[in-house]
Length: 397
Image (tube, rainbow, N blue to C red):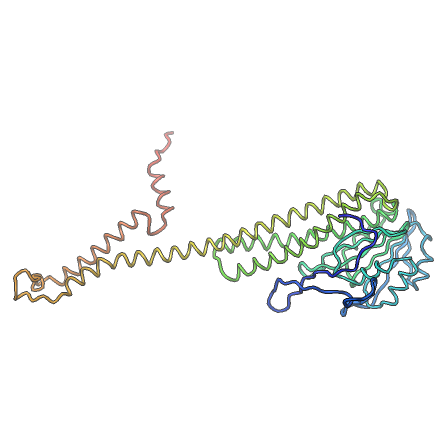
């Protein structure tokens, strides 16, 4: 993915959240009305009030001060080697404008912050690196939430739609001084946050894998309409995951190719590992999509096989009744035995009627025996296996 110096405010495609019956549709949405000036800020109708958390740290010290106005946040940069400011919620546009002004953010960057349907990307601006990524939303299946990062020389700004994220392991590492995160710079913190976002997709894919295994067993054992509906829902979820993970891989690759000074060579080595995780996730998603498509084929094949079994049984029944109908039709002809000795003399026989019934039963039984010997009735595989076992000589001790 290329690094863009000036992003354009464009229409984005977003997935519709399923309400009631699941629907796999898309709609075109715009953050601002058509014809609005570039950089127009329009908050989402469901945006919540912002909550700001600040963590400042160095090798030997960590501080979590109470967030103040935007000017105080900017003035606090440099008190310790690295400052992490996390803003949860986009409901207060005035606060976001003041933060953007204090940190020198471009108006297009702020517009991308509040436009929560951005594609993951990385863009270079004067004095900072702007990163958009998507984080799986806990407890909501495959829905994702936009995370925006601003990487400066000694600070990281993160904007998210609401409180609650996958960054808690990073916070614990900072507070407990685990690993090298406290000794590294702001670029390593940005990497740690991106790595936490990528790793957050693993539990989601594990759940999809469990659903896939359950549906596979159900479709093979007893295919039903409910199972095939669940398969289509799973395919929709995997498509949404692909739409979220594929651009992440391109975004991380663009960070690896970036020759700017904000990301050190040491951090690029760790970004390679993050890129490998994104590639692995894409491989798993593609594999699951192929398996889900194969399950649809298995379902259709199973339904066709069941239909063939039903048709075979009906054909056998009709075949059995053909000679029975012939016998009954022959004896149903009203020839007068008194007119000629050749006109069905057995009609006057004492055992004529039992003989006709016995003939019908014998013909039906003979046909059933023939069909079974041919393997058209019953478990033909089990019989073939038994015949092979009888033909195979036993090994002598």
